[in-house]
Structure formats: structure tokens, C-alpha cells
Length: 423
Image (tube, rainbow, N blue to C red; front, side, top):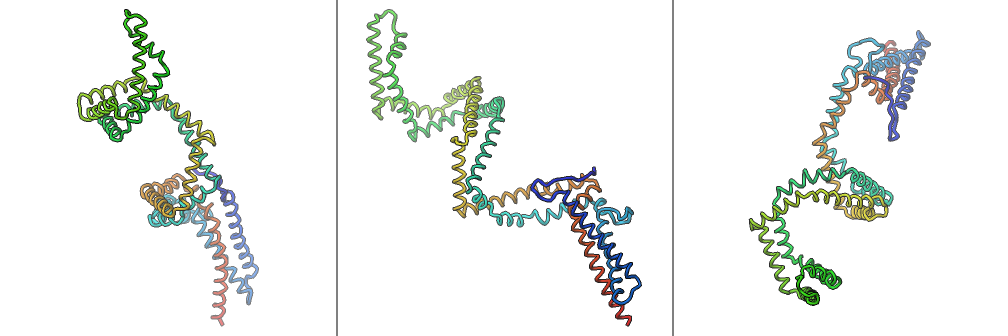
């Protein structure tokens, strides 16, 4: 549907209003030259000598101006409104024009060699390094990343986490046997003695707790003491048990080769082997896994963990001096420095960018160029002519101007030849 074309250029370029004014000015110049040539022709009509040359030049200028006016006008509409054949070419053949333009762009611009050469010539990595070297730009990148991350985190609601756990994670965990995985991990941990640190930490904490909480030990053991035994006997036994427990923990803690440690290692090794090869142990582990997955606390725990993590991340992202922002700023600075000092890295990134651009054009180039055809097809003939004339019509007026001038010169030349031959 046609209508007035009023667009603006957000990048500060020429607007349609400016183009329209420039087109009117050039039309005025072209028409003025035609009127001037006509006036000269009338004034010098039937004159000989020098004025005969002027008259011949003016006559030829009018012919050239009118011919080129007809040619330019015929592109966009019928000259003088007359339905002359092969005029108003753009309104009549706009769809063919769009297809031809689509093919032209695809065949001459969206080619691998052209794209790759242009991307490599740009030097994307070097430009990124130079841009990030400016502190204000690096901070801007971090601010943008932090804002986008905070927005993305805020969009994830608890029901999304619940759906993820129920619909994606839990079914996958049910299908995947957990026993071989746990057995393999435990086997690797035992082979690398990773569990010894955890055992030492547990022994230290338990030893310190026993020393710091004798009353609790008395209370727990006293509840299980025989009711018929005298209190003094129970107290003596409990004190003795407490002392032995503290001494036993001290021995285990101080002796890396203690028999209790060896027994624990043997038990864990057996468990690791059974988890990988014993069907009965594997079946028990799978049943335990399913009971855990069926427990409502799984969903609540996942939501609580996500909420806590999101809250901590958002709080840190909102703080320019927070740990996350400072870490991002450090990483951006490291990246800028490495790009600036590592030509090999810059070359690899430039080639990656070229490969990515070529892949995108190869995969989606036809869809990109099809936008030209689809856009022009949506215009009606009059609108297409208006839009195209608005962008190229000013330059086409030079054809009319040149036709007027060149026509006049050719007219003078022909008149001179005629005069020469007449003599």
C-alpha cells in the first residue's frame, strides 16, 4: 500500500526529507537548463554567422534535454501521463528488479573469497584489543555483561527450576545407573588417597567435640544405661568410656597406619568394587537413588540452592566493586593484554571470525538476499518507484544536465560541419 515516505536515519545520515529536497533542486537545475536552451533558440532563430552556431547548439540542447528527460522519467512513471510502451519500467517490473538485485548481491558480494578477504583485512582481534585497552570501554563491557546476566537470572523463576528438575534431571538420573559412577569415583579417590584428608578432618573434629562436650556424652550414654545400676556405677562407666573414646581418637589421629584406618580403607575399597561389579550392591544403590529422587525435599533443596545462588550472584553483579564485577574486569584486562601481545592469537581469532562469517553466509546467505525480493514484493508499483527515485533520482538528473550540455556541443559541431560542407 503506497503512501508518503517519511523516514529518518538514526545514525545521523541523510534523511528522506533531505533526499527529497536535493532531488527537487537537481530537477530545477535540469529544467532551468532546458528553459534556457529554449529561450536562446527562440532569440537566435533565423540568425546567421556566430548566432547561427548558438541557435544550432540551443536546438540540439533542447533535443538532448528532452530525450534524457524522457529516458529518466520512463524509469519511474509514464511521461506526461501517457501510457507509452516500455515506460514506467520500475512500477511494472519491480518484482523482476528485486529478483535481479537479489541475484546480483548473492553472486557478487556474498562469496567466500570476498567475505574472508574482507574479514581478515578488518583485523577484528587487533581492533578489539585496542578498544578494550581503554579502561572506560573495558568497564562498559563488564557493566553490560553484568546487566544482562542479572536480567537473565531474574527471569528464572522457582517453577522453572522445578520443571527442570522434574522433567529433565530426575528422568535422566533414573535412567542413568549411579552405581558404576559412584564406584569409579570412589575407586579413583582411594587410589589417589583423597579420602585421607577427609578422614583426618573428621577425626580432628570428632576428637575436639568429645573433649569440649563431655556433658552431652554423659547424657547420650546415660539414657541407655541400665536402670537398675547405681548412679555412681553408671557415672564411673560413662567417664571411663569417654576417656577411652578420647584416647582412641587420639591414637587414630596420630597414627597414619592405625588398624582402624586400614579397616576403613578396606571397607571403602570393598564398597567401590561392589558398586562396580556386585549386582546386589548395585541394586541397593539404585533403590536408594530412587528413594532420594522421589523425596519431596529434592525439589525444595534444588529451589533453595538456586534461590541462594541467584541472590548472591545478583547482589554481587549489582555492586560495581563486587567480586564478580572485579573478576570480570580482571579477565577483560587480561584478554586485552594477551590480544595486544600475541600475534598468533590475533591471527587465529581473525581466521575464526572469517570462518564463522563464511559459515553464516553459506548457511543463511540465501535467506539474507531473499529479504530484498520479499521487501520489494510487498511494495506496490508506485511506492517502489518513489522509494528508488528518492535514493537515485538526484544522480539521474545529471543525465539530463549532461544531455543538455553534450547535445548543445554536438549541435554546434554538426552545424560547423554543415557550414563547412556548404562552402
